[in-house]
Structures are given as structure tokens and as C-alpha cells.
Picture: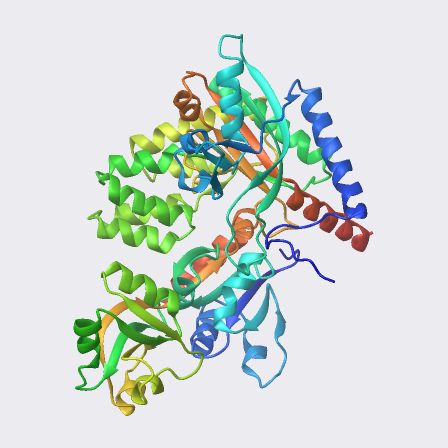
Length: 330
Length: 215
């Protein structure tokens, strides 16, 4: 007799559970060794808390009423609950706060696409460190986590969430046109990006160079290439990226970092550095992160913050794929 | 993602010829694909080519089974929830997505006036839904998989939303274009991870395709 479970959820059987437990253990060990203490938060938050993220993508998809009529939400990510936790529990304390988590989050799915409604995430949040140092530290922890997971071919994309926002402002686009262009970029539609710039009255050459900018990804050389393609907004983003990348280089941590000027994560709360994680064994992004000073501010703390989250199930798939390839080639 | 040469998904059907011509102009070797082979996968120097249905291209590319692909903008619009990077307008395969109805017939306007609702047959329910929503009209969409031109002629729907290249099929079935929704051409798309991790190869091919499509 089959008793169905909701689409986008799954049971985990002992074999996989053992592998997942090893992976979780390896990651937590890396996080703890670097001073990130593990925390847990409730799966259910007040909707008002999750809504502070101010990003449509981070908005909880599952909301319901409690017995006294309060609006509750299943958490859609872990950064918002941890920002809330730090603001209410450590507000007076000395920073920086280093916290890590292993937790399930809940997202809406599109039917028949095999997407997961319940996602297991592992990540860290560093709250209260100076911006450039914080970003660098988080990238180093991420590299150690990828190593611990055995993903030595994985690459970390490093971009700047403010680059296009400020560039479009500089080009004189109004808020509505800006959102329209940013939506194209976030969905990876570079043809539409250029088209919408033209429609907004930008001349053909500037529209073309602005679209070209989104194609720049690679080592330090892309920063020089980018300089030729934009004005003050681009120059500011380049200098921020330069600062972070130089520091990574100095610490010998830049090898697997790819600078990516077209990177734009759809979570609305990032500002400054943004991260995305890829492994050649998998066609999907393994996770991401970045700086979210604005989110801390919305919780009443004027602190710089950065973090990343990895989708554990995807890391696990990539891990298995990599070890299969390893066996094939040996 | 593939380890060897990039895997390119090309669409069988209306865009197939134009795609091969463009690949030739970009310096690829498509002679195997032009034969009458029943194979679905071809190993050419520097490129593994798989031939799929146009509407399957986003599926293969989103998953990473193919690193890059070529398909129509109509397909990308209809499957706008698939996350693929759209890198280039290739310019060929130009056609229009239109609202059409029987020539001289006023059923569309009449349905709109009397019922506040039109019945539209289409292979592109999501494009049609977005279009009518954005123009503030209510429609009942009837999804058809085959020749949609037949539907209004025998009373299934008041009009159709369909892709028109020359307009001959419409004409021969006594239909006329009432509204133009969007113009569509072939597009070059890439898997989101491949676009990052195989940047140099993809950029090189993008450059060649851009040149070739302008030539």
C-alpha cells in the first residue's frame, strides 16, 4: 500500500543517511575548528521576521495562523533567522559573532520539475567583522568546507551585488526600468538586458558595453577589462573586488575564486560582495552567499555581515559524481 | 556538465537548417549532421552535438546534460521558469507570435463584448496567458499540441495564439493576424554552471556565432 508524501519532499534511507551524516560531520568540524559555533533556530518564525529580508525570493512560501491568529511562516532561509537571533541575543555583546548551522529550509516548487520543497542547508554567518576581512574569512571557510567535502574542483564565483544597481542609476534609469533590467540579469537573459537598456533610451554603444560587462568572469584580468566598460559605478565595484581579491591572493586563497561581474543573486538582501559555488560535476549551483549589512540594519544592528549556505543534497550529489569520475579515470 | 568538448543541443525541425548553416559559418564541421543518419549524438572535432526537439533544448541545458544550446525565443518564453543563460540573438528563424482569428469573423470581439472572455486555442499557454493578463483581458486557454489553425474553424475557441513565419498556413486556413504579441528568433543559450566554469570556450564560440550571424 502506497501512502504518498507531498511532492518536493523525500524520505532518506539508511545508506544515504550514513553518507549525509559523514558529510554533515565533516562540515561542522571545519566550521567549529574556525570558531563558528553551531546554532539552531525554530523552523517556524513570525512572518514579520522572514519578511524583513525584503527580497521576493526570500519570502516564505508557507504561511499559516497560530491558535491566537498570529501569522507564522516556515523559514525559507537561515540567514534571516540568524540575523534575528544575533540582534535579539547578542545585541550588546562584543563582535564579531561567528555562527554556523545545519538546517532544513522550505521553498515553493514549480510542479513536475523535481524541485525540492524541503532543502537541507549548511552554512556560516560572520556578523560584526569589517567588510573586506569578513568577506575574505567567509571565502576561506567556504574553501575549507569544499575541501572537506572532497570537491577539489569546485569554483567560487565572486561578484558585486551593487555593481549593476549603481551602474543603472548612473545611466539615469528610473526605479522601474532598473528593476526591469536587473530582472533580466538575475534570470541570465543577456539579450534582454541589452534590449531593455535600449528601450530605456540608453545609446547603443553604452547598452552593448553594459551587457558585455555581465559576460566578464575569470581571474584578475577581468577587472582591467571592466575598467574600460563603465564609469564611476563600475570603478567603485572594481576597487571593492580588487581589495577582496588582493587579500585572498595574499593569503593564498584566490586560486579557486573566479571574479564574475555578471553575478547577481536573486535574494534581495545582499549588498557588496556576493558568492556562488559551482562544481564541474553538477549543472546546478551548489550554494552561495555574500554580504548583507542592510539586513542587519533592518534588525536594528549597524554591523557588517557576511555568510554562505551550501545545499547539502547537491553537495552530496556532486561528491558522488566526482568520486565516480575518479574511479572511472583511475 | 561534460568533461570533454562542449556539448551543444541543436533543435531538429524548422530551425535545424539555419542552425547548421550558422555552425558551418562559425567554423564547425556539420557534415555528419547533414547526412541521413538516425543517430542523435554526433562527435565532431571540438564539439559534441546532440539533436533534440526545440522545446527540449532548455531542459537539456538547464540540467547541464548539454552545456550550450540553440532554440527559438518562443520556446524560451514559454519555458521562462527554466534557468538558462541567454547569450546571443542569432537573428535567424525570425517569426511572430500572433493572435489570429477567422478572416472577417467578429467572434473575438463579440465574445469580448458579450462575455468579457475569449476562448483561445494555443500551443503556447503561458505566453498567451501573460499577454492577455498584461493587456487586461480575460481568456479561457485551450491547450492544443498539434495544428492549432484547425481549432477555430470548427468551433473550438474564438481565436488562436500561434507562431507565424510567412503567414501562408494562416491564409490557407482562412485565418488573419489580429494582434502581434512578440517577435521571435533563434537564441544561443548556456547552462548556468558551464557558463562560469567553461567561460573561455563558451566565449570563443559566442564570438564566432556573433560574427557568423551578422555575416
